[in-house]
Image (cartoon, rainbow over all chains, first blue to last red; front, side, top):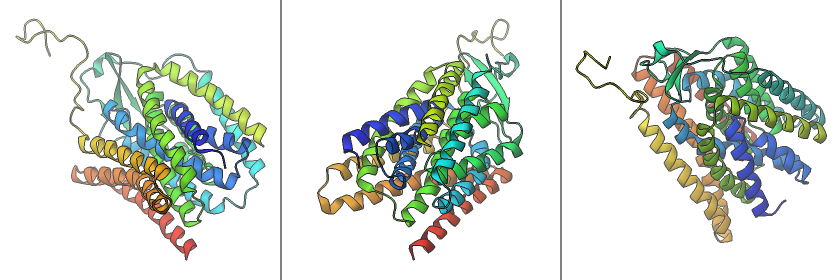
Length: 273
Length: 109
């Protein structure tokens, strides 16, 4: 196992990047840990601990901002957590190389989908200026503030979103990553949710996915508390830092950052495979 | 409305945030959970050998429990406000996580 300061720094850096893009830090942390020689069976639970810490740390600030859509997150997380549960239980049966290649393709495809679009899909609407901000009760719609203006939105293609979340959950349980790198692009590009709302809602949902996976990993006796503490302490600091940076960035910059991060992840995963 | 003719001063800058004060409990709870988890994590790293495992278990329990308390709080809030559809969706989610806990316990035993 790596030294505690190295694990702390890795936890901090990956949670910061993961929270900023709403992708969870584990999709970077787990491949890096494996490349540095950590056993994949130990790296996966560490990745999930990093995801849980980053999600928890980002929560208060994202709630203050009013950018988390809880109804959308809870709805999508039903299939997400079910997938995580199945994936964690099946994690010994799927060849690691095959999984890593599949993840690489998904990451690069998500990066291309987000990166080719220019400008804002959800634009400020003056007639919604006095509309209630945040999520609208009883719906998968809402409004958020962009500068001094109000942007309304409504989630579309829910069945496709639910299917994608099942896949994200499976990946999370199998590989020990948060699945946010699938969830955020799905919400943003398929369901047409503004990228800031998608990133914040994804950060909320990966915390629940991580909780489900951690319960299973604890039952399997795969948690290394000493290494995990270093990753979690770094992850909490990185999560707070990422959420601070996220609210200062323009959505287009968040999307560009997300696309670059996904391409890097795809390359890392392919090299790993 | 505001501005000339209404007797109210013209509004400058963004409108007041109607979300102010909403979900305060959840924000305070999450801030507390972050602090407690951080303390457990640091304590696990510096505590004497005998206490480390307990502190590590408490840290992981916080990471598992905090998001589930958040969902539970949302479910209660939605039911109390008559948003039955999403209240039931939240109950379904907690059911899936509970199933995971049962399967994990079966694996242990």
